[in-house]
Structures are given as structure tokens and as C-alpha cells.
Amino acid sequence: MKNIGNQLKTLVLMSSLTVLVILIGGAIGGQSGMLIALVFALAMNGGSYWFSDKIALAMTGSQPLTEDKHPEVYQIVEKLTTSASMPMPKLYITPSPQPNAFATGRNPNHSAVAVTEGLLTILNHDELEGVLAHELAHIKNRDVLIGTIAAVMAGVITTIANWAQWALMFGMGGSDDDEGGLLASLPLIILGPIAAMMVQMAVSRSREYLADSTGAAIAGQSQGLSNALLKLERASGMVPMNVNPAASHLFIVNPLKAKRLMNLFSTHPPIEDRVRKLQATPV
Image (tube, rainbow, N blue to C red; front, side, top):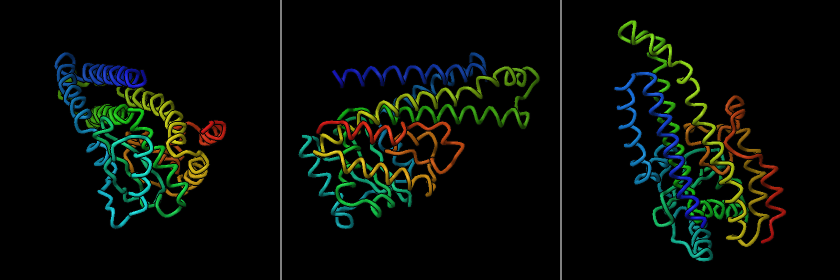
């Protein structure tokens, strides 16, 4: 039932963001703009399904994590995947001093887990196990595809809106009618990225609570993840991370917390709520 529910969520997400892209295209370019936007949206939907892991890893600059350099990570993931009866995901490392992590892929057989360089420097064994179990829970719950599609489509919507804004600023409409159409579409150009961000927020918040509880069950204890979340919360507020905002909801904690304006639109539930729920969860 959980798998069917996530498949429906994926379908609804893809459909709603596709409609939003088409509306923005229509507002900017009329019927021809809608047609171009439709083709663009279909191509991005197909690409985000088949290449979701590669897209997310490219957006974050992640590189393969080798077993000889990070044997502890491999040993923990092997132990957890065996306990959860899951296939071993590909492992990556993200070149960022901010401690964080994310999972991506279209299903458990085509998935990846990435950890930042900063994560490996501040967590002890139990805390690292808790974070990795949380990311494996995203894969086990089959919601990594939903998150990646949201990231890709939010990026598409933001890009189209940015193009239109630059066109307005530099008068690239080409004619008075074109410029009038761009001006008339200004509300949609502004509200489109906000709507995409709201979708990201709704998707991410529900996913994080479920992954926390499932991850605690996979690890066999919740204290490691609870302690890790508190550490990551403090560190993310002090150490900035250079990441595309469209991919921010993929991470275990908000990577843009150090940027106060972006924190107003956080895609993550409050850490104190997550820790409280974890401590009340029987394992």
C-alpha cells in the first residue's frame, strides 16, 4: 500500500508541476509558449525518472565515495541494508564542509546515498549510523524519486521565470505586443517559483518524519539519529553550503539554514519536532 501511495504521489507531483510549467509558458508565449513548455516538461519528467540519481548528484557536485578511503561508511551501510533486506546503494561524497546527507534514485535497485565531507568529521559511529539509516529509509519507503522530481521541476520553473524576468528587464519582448504579454504574465512569473517551493515543502516535510521513524527501526535505536539531528541543526546554521535551492529539500537537514532569507521558506520540519517524535517512537 505504501508503494502504491508513493506512486500516486509521484503521478500527482509530475502532473501538477507540468501544468504549472505549461501555464507559465502560456503566459509568456501564448499557445506556442504552451506547446514549447509542454515538450520541455515532458522531456524533464522523463529525464528526472530515468536519470534522477545522476541529476541530483550533478546538482550537488557529489563524487563516488571509495571503500578504501571510507571503510566505516561502507561497513555501516552493508550492515543496515542487510538488516533491512535492501540492495546496497551506490555511495557518494559531497564536497562541502557543512555536515549533511541525502538519498536519490528511482527505486531501491537504482539508488544512491551521498554524505558531505563535513558529516564524516563531526559524527560518532552511532550518529553516522542513524543518518545513514535515515537515508536508506527514504529509499526503502520509495520516496526518493518524488523528492528528485520535485527538485528537477522546481528548477525548471525557476529557470523559466528567471528567463522571463530578464526579458522584461532588458526589453527583449521584440514587440509591443510581446512586451505587453510579458507584463501581463508578471504575476505568474513571480508566483510560479513560490508555488513550486510550496510543493517542495509539502513533499519534504511528510517524507522526513516517515524516514526518521523508519530509519530508527532499521538502525534498531533512535538515539543516534536524534543526537545527529541536533548536531546537524547547529552546524547548518553556522556553516553555509553552496547548493541549488531546488535541491535543498533532498537533504536530511535544511542546507540553506545559514541563509536567513531562505530559512523563511524552509522545506524541512523543525528539528525539535523531529527529535521529539523520534524519542517517542518505540524501536
